Image (cartoon, rainbow, N blue to C red; front, side):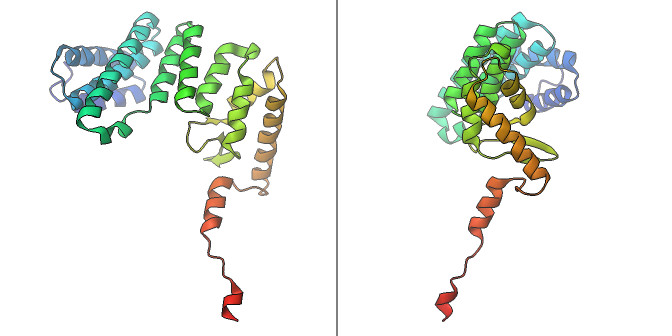
Length: 246
């Protein structure tokens, strides 16, 4: 069973295979891995954490392999077992709760699984939940708009989050909108929503223009590549009061 005697090693191997695109192998391994751990009814916190990670991988790989019914079922198990893990940690090791994969991330993953399965109403529900858990969640709001298409009613929500997120950031040759306390996105899909939305909310038009203007200013050197970081660094620069020497 793929070296299941060491669950941590098996999990690492699955993740490596996933990154390499060996999805059929990952599906087989993740199915066996999660079945084995689910059969253990006396799971401690560490084992439960491994189970949750395994189910997360299983749900994603089933979705990639177009096994949509099984993928959706796996997301239900993911939510159930994650809840059990949170309960175990709350009772035994509350300091570890903050090390869990953020809830909003799992909700977005589940949303994408449902969207890929053609269950758009369910997908939107989970993307909305992700934004409720972590307000200003550009990644979740963007996914919500993408599921809706050009008729989306949520582009103005995305525009508000983009405005609150602050200036465009240049990283590794790509431009991003990245809030301080929520997931962001590369600008291209954001602009695609703003510039193709049939409703043409004024806020969407305004933010699209703002993004393009800031990209141009960064490219020409007028604006810092990361204005937020630059501002923080500037605030640490000592400012001498020369009157104190007189």
